[in-house]
Length: 341
Ligand SMILES: Cc1ncc(COP(=O)(O)O)c(C=O)c1O
Image: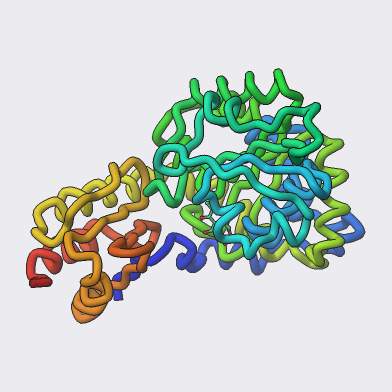
């Protein structure tokens, strides 16, 4: 099977497993796991933040950050299809008692102008207090769209002027950085908190890192415990994350070029109505006949190719470290043989 459903499907390579098995561990809730400590200080230094916290998932890092920034009754501004809102089980309401202001944006990205327009007036008691702006880079629902860094700087200006913290769901931050070429520390500077997934394109089996100021991470560590996320000998999995950050970043450009090749191949198929511009490792297509989506998924499966439904008439394909150039050639050939009429 060529499995293009998600970059979360990757399994650790032999070297990563070796590093994990050899990890020195301790009780991380006591702060005594040397490998977790090493990962946290490596990540903080790498991204230019004061501190980091190793967590079980990207959902957990996002939800912890939101909980630290927002009070019950407050409001989070984010894109209407952002992961923090759409795919985290209503966690903003459930965990933090906050509401959301959802912005339309463009391919999963929001702008400083929109944020300014839709922030609630602070002195009018009718409205919940706007307390956080959250953006996603790359934007999953935008087909892996990458933010223009200048827009991020403008968003930061609006946040500063209105005393709002800025959170980044950087589940695929390394994919964004591979495209925009901006130095990690420069890119991360405007954000008050950042979630980075180690278990997507980077290929670790488990884990995400939350980054921020030392004070923010002290608060986040408490919330992680309350959310049931205090782990004990977590060094075994942290070692996979360390390996991923050290050795699996440079190869992301191959996933991006594979996605581009898929885009070129898909453009030749008469059943494709539209393809979101491919910028990173995600390819989202819209079918000419939306009700043929499941037929397409089945037809691809018959060729040994797995893809995922991504909404009405839409499918998503994601390239990752198990997908080779030969796999892409195979897929590009197989799709020419599919007749959806
Ligand atoms: C943009 C984005 N943010 C956050 C997450 C959550 O990560 P996890 O699956 O580790 O909870 C995902 C997962 O796919 C994602 O795509």
